[in-house]
Length: 451
Image (cartoon, rainbow, N blue to C red):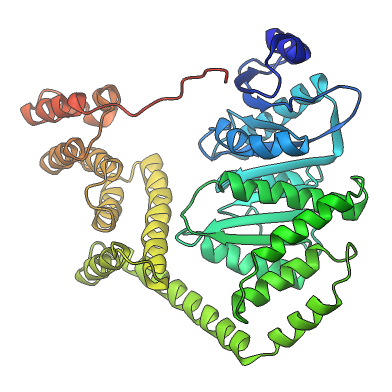
């Protein structure tokens, strides 16, 4: 109840407009979340809310990034500290706990309940909307949850997606943009310079402003002509100047978003004319060709992975690492980084399954290939050491563990307690590797403070 007293007394004790890193649910204290309540909060009116989901249960990250927009536009933001990549039942329990706790203590506008997520958390956020709870989604680096039925024919919520140009899920969001367009779904997808990550403060502010605009169009928020004019000016100023594919896409989005809010005749005409131009048609073909090339490359790597770390796979890994390490940015460098990250992500997923089934020999073979793509990465080398130990290859297990220590592995307690290393504990090489791991500086942990 202590936190509830804090919320009720915000204006009196100076905590108004500040972020609480950890709030325990009253009905189930094991379920916790980060929370931001705007400084002008009052229970006399209902407030929009964004529920956030991170694949690593770091709910405070999106709450922090959404805080400026939440304060400016009057949103409550809550980020689960329990929801993470894993079984749906655990995520569903986290969702229920946070929703019930927030609704029992704060005045929420259920017509304007939104969700936001990163990667697997984006799929959780979208599932909330598919289930009818959330009316809009901010999906970073992933889209809809996997379903045999695919996307619904009619998408009954608004969707704001983001992906980095080096994000291994870039292709997914690129395809999703076209699918949502074909369904005439209200959506906007933005690509930015970056990787597989939460959108920036600025981009999340754009998302909240987009939610505001959509709420005014649907009637769930009072129309504010000054806000509409200012947002139009902001979006219009960011349009690419030259008649290119990117200007056409931006104009399409602008016209769709402001339909019914202002006279768009001039911009609708330009959008149509530009869409028929050679520059746009050529650009679209080039995009499709590049995406097909990326898909083919990933498919070939997947096929090669079934045969172990072959000469061909090693050469491809070396070529991709070289392209990914280039100093100058280019579409080729972006693709190389996406492929390397994508192969690593799918490989880690497969490795977890192999560990769970006790197939350490196959896990070691797969991890050897992953290390070819990301040499010198402590996490991959540590997993390789575990797999080799489980497979009974002591010499190679100790070599990989030594390399993991040299690469910066710092969790000595975890290494020493790992049952896969039980038979290696008394080996001099194991103790030497453990000594090096203890010397490495630990990763910074969250402070759990109230800011």
